[in-house]
Length: 414
Image (spheres, rainbow, N blue to C red):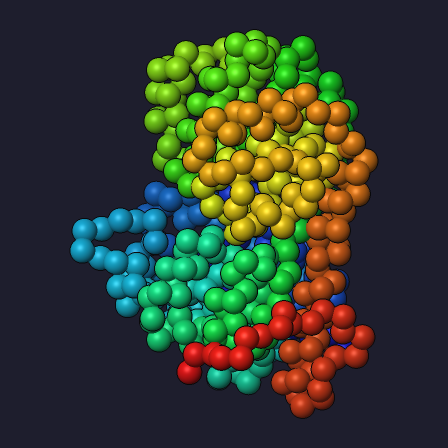
């Protein structure tokens, strides 16, 4: 008999994928939905009078055996910087745990398992519901390494409860596993996956479809225009190599608070003919941009995984990335891409030069990327699910399980 799955996440795309926050979670849901009788997704949304995109666009919807709910809540977002109010203090003013519980009482549905995404508030809500519903909760820790470190150092009882009482913690890289093992013995390294829409497409056809020049070298970066994404260093690197590559065009797909600063940098460094800020694009269009480029660059200051690297590789593209915990486990050899240090525009420029000169083996890149398809990754997560459900009912570990926790350290926090 199939089970019912409850997913709690701070972000999830709307019915038309106009709002694409948490798109990787929806890709996962679409991959595993046939394994369940019903999946319910709850993604609390900050009530803003429709000023923020998800409050304006996201309405409850259903498709196949998946139901998605967006209860409106009040809380202080982590990205909102207020004088005298720390991120630790923000946890005390957050109605999401109560609103989610109230919604579930109203729905009256029964569940066999909870999968929470991110620590706050989803993981805390998950363990709160676990105590009342007597079902297991699995938590995926998606936050970037700096955010994870901040949560660890908060010494906040609600964060600690979320990690201590989960039946398993999933993390996309091994670098942060030791931090989580201080709280929980069941820590699994499970990467994120890429959607099947990311696949090789003829480069010339993609350029024509996007109105891009066919005779130029194109370097692409995809990501929100935020300081942590390191785009300012990419622009400086492009500045230093355009004399050597006058046909070079750098395209950055995304939007965000750093847009004005980057536009000014383009003016100051005379990069009009060599940099295009393309803005946000529909998720289904991103594969065209990936396939149109010669080289993909992720100049982030820090990354816990960086799924866009895998998406680019799934299109057969080599990657230039900064040496961060997430990227180290993706670019496993110099046949797949090259590393530079974060915040180092000179080294980034040199690696872009090398990347443009190398004769990359597209088939080898595609073969490596395939192990990160959601079909492969989801199989590992489903086995963690099975084990948690079996152990919750006193049946022992699920038969056929091949995923094992990363070995724990001898000590753990009380």
